[in-house]
Length: 241
Ligand SMILES: [Zn+2]
Image (cartoon, rainbow, N blue to C red; front, side):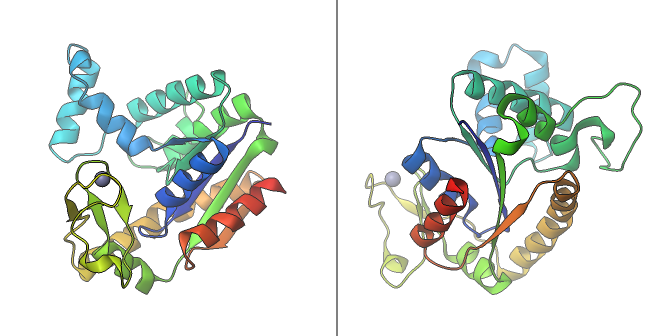
């Protein structure tokens, strides 16, 4: 049975890593929506499209992309993945109440609204294409100290994008073990900035998690502190239930 898996967790909880491991082990498509949207707005062949040009400008000036456009694109791509017969895993998205639940929330303010016409969010879309019982929601829990430590020490390959976890062996590595590319610090944020991001994350995600629960989903909490391969085993066990 094809499934959709949604992985939430604070920055540094290992969402992307777990999604990649699931993809490698079970063939789910890791739909990294942030990365995908960036590719679309920077696609040279699409610059004649005024809608995309507008979004590219927002992106390049560091502004949020239009929620209505994001939802449309994410649903389109999800539809293609499902139609091609693949399971899908999201890391950290849907990111807003509007993206998750559609027009019952205002796209800009996130406040509850009573729209004249209703647009379903990603959750309803997934229910349509995969079936509600085939949707799993996972919340990776890590202590904020770990999140800060991971975020401030993580390195990423500038060529292939491999993320190198911080540990005693890797902390002085300068080249990528996969492709030999140059490793850079993923973020130069100081702990104070990361703390602010954690608070922001909580504020943004908590209402989505609680609404997901209200719709009858179990939000499966998994301890994200152990090494990724151990967390992965728990994820697989959960999905096999
Ligand atoms: Zn590399």
